[in-house]
Length: 284
Image 1 (cartoon, rainbow, N blue to C red):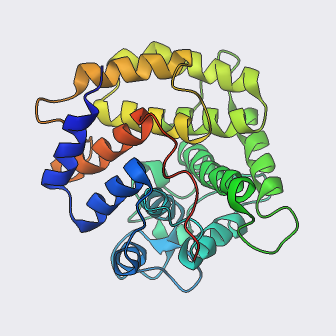
Image 2 (spheres, helix red, strand yellow):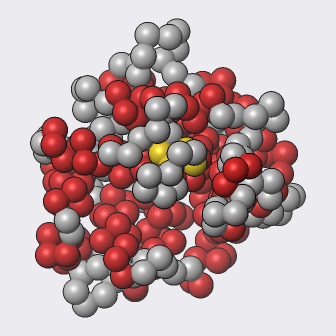
């Protein structure tokens, strides 16, 4: 079994103030001090997204989704900064239901966010669709994110799901990066496209033994966030894999370098924690 106490100890020992606040919110729903929330929100562009680089002028879909994942662990999706970011994501949806990065980012974007690349577009569509799905779930649980009828982004997410399904292969595979699989499965699960989501999950399960610890943590946290139960078959497999790959210091290794090991460990904690702490946004 995953040693949650050891994982918590790793974050306490190695995390910065924001990461420790994320841990407290995930464990107990402890309110985060305003100054830490403002630190986590810093650098937002006037249009609502976040640039991929410090001081950048053009907001990035990929960078904005990553920042939303951090704010979610702080219970901050209901604050004005996250609301603007979610609105910005919705406004960036293309006519076919997908997302793509701004062409001006062509020279600097990583391969999974390269403008005009079909594989990157599917990943970005699944990622943006996931966060707008999460916003809709929180709106139902805690009241709407704004005063519009329905609370937020139902039509946007439905179009994203249709865009994803149009790209799936008959065997459940997808022509994109690995993470697009679990993000797509989460979006389709919440759209009641259970057969399509299940086909993706079968492919993910077949690949899980070869996945890195950071990827398994991300997969499990993503599926858990949209309500897939800890006892569901794919979650059981994911938690078994996390137990196999947890280090003796309590943490998990990130694919992005050791400076992101705390982030990977927080994802594992989100996936494994027994209670649903941290699911609802803080008031702004």
